[in-house]
Amino acid sequence: MIAQDSIEALKARLDIVDVVGNYVELKKAGGNFKAPCPFHDEKSPSFVVSPQKQIYHCFGCGAGGDAVKFVMEYEKLNYPEALEKLAQSYNFTLTYTDNKHNKPRSQVIEKLSEWYQTLLTQNQTALSYIKERGIYESSIEKFGIGYAPDSDATLRFITSQQFNINEAVEMGVVGYNSERHQTYARFIERITFPIHSANGSMVGFGGRTITGHQAKYVNSPETKFFNKSRLLYAYHHAKQSIYKRSEIIITEGYLDVIMLHQAGFEHAVATLGTALTQEHLPLLRKGSPRVVMAYDGDKAGRAAALKASKLLSASGFNGGVVVFEGGLDPADMVKEGRIAELSDIFHTPKPFIEFVLDELLSLYDLRDPKAKEACMQEGVSYLKTLSPILQEEYKTYLASRLGGLGVSPSLVKITPQQTQQTMQPMQKNTHRDMWELTLIKTILEHPEFIDQILDVLDPSLLQFHSREFQAALNGDTQIPELMAIMVDESTRAIQTQEHLTQELCMFLMKYYERELKKINLATNISFEQKAFLIRKYRGKIAKLKRGELVSFEE
Image (cartoon, rainbow, N blue to C red):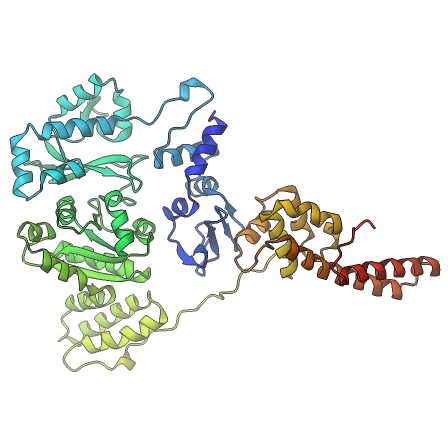
């Protein structure tokens, strides 16, 4: 069992926006963040994350909770599994009440990386390759570049350091051949590039052959620590520069990143041998940077740039594409000292939407009317993924590029998409009384006011939200109705005792005036009882008008 103080220490490290933002694209909305709910199908975002309250809540399906609850629901894990998943992600060592579990995450990757770095200094072939590419010794140290020897040497090192081979298999640095019942090192005779998570934990390696292996580059396999579709190489080095510049440069390779950092472009990262995917977007969204895709000009590079541009433009990212022609890449340009030219190129990328449309146009023979029609249809299909304003703007752009005789923008027809109603789903209460909700939020944020409130007010006095009021008094903050109140920025808690007194006086005055009318109209009580109650309520109202709170039991 995980020790409770260890759980609390882990939770203190977690930030709800950071945790949820690793899975879902969050967009700033006032003091909160919003997104389409990951737990039910919707297009208009009703999923809210509150950094102040450290909770999330969906106004559509009612899902809500803290960072641990989110990981449980999203990853379909139980409570201990979610804690362990978060601990691994944040490089936190949990402690357990039973000693057999008190074992931190294996450090085999870190030890191997140190050893590989030592071996690099002893291998002249690897060192010569590194130096030929223009990489400085300071960059070798910064990025932890190393050299992996033959398989047997790596396996011997792992066992010599008292690591269990199963640990190495779990961490992805050793593989197992089930047919031969043999283990083998994943990285053999390769220059190694350690790969880190966004928070700096080492999670895998990339490796480049220098002895003619069939695969030029390989990466660690997918493990519970390593998901290449959610990672970007060197992001942990680049993130401060990304936030400072509000820009990120995404390249295709490790060497491009290293050389760009060496030249001062410290906001450069790379995908890990895979195309940019939907899973990368939450990481790219952090800091709301402009995204510059720096891709090779060959067929594969242009195809990858086209796919990435479609994804990024449809997701509302700003930025564009830089294509390197003539066999050059960013690393080559840095080596040749063309830093100023690179800076100009990165400052003027082709915007994503223009790049997509131009690339689509280049795929067709526009002298053929049928091809021109097919091109227009593909272009229109793409424009439909954009906002209505951008559709209208780029409809003209597409028409103007469609060939010799030109095409009228009126022929580029985009059928309006059905828009979902943006109204919030109906609350369980058909009426939302803002004053009552304000009172409930005050109890949640200022429990020191509870005694003052309960001296003069009973939950039964609330007409619309007495259930939520009682739940707030009981501390049942996990129920969806209270989470909705906590993340709702239109409802603000009362901050001072003086303001609270004024508000309670106004509310109670209206309440007792309603009760007075009921008594005057009542026919089922005696004259004496009616006279007593009228005097009682008139006395309360008089005190309240003078700003004096009166006990509910009076």
